[in-house]
Image (cartoon, rainbow, N blue to C red; front, side):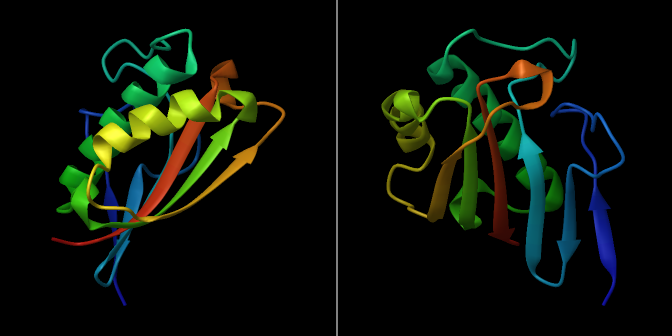
Length: 127
């Protein structure tokens, strides 16, 4: 099976030896997105809600570049540095996944790249 590497300038460039996403068959495996501005590379937002919004915008851009969309997401993994802020993240997450409810896990971690507060990765089907 052939793998297709996904790269778009509408989302932050990879900050290491990985791809924004990889398409295998009819599935898109998106690397974790953090709250970076795609142009400047600066962290956007200083609270979980603002960062979650930017993370999901970045994730949407990667999915669209792959030929998919948030509506095709089947699974998300959410990493947070403080699960005490889960409600804030969940409220913004619900704006992006209003009627479509992919499977999801949320875990607290000690630290994330660039000291952001939230990172989200996803698996989606192609449109």
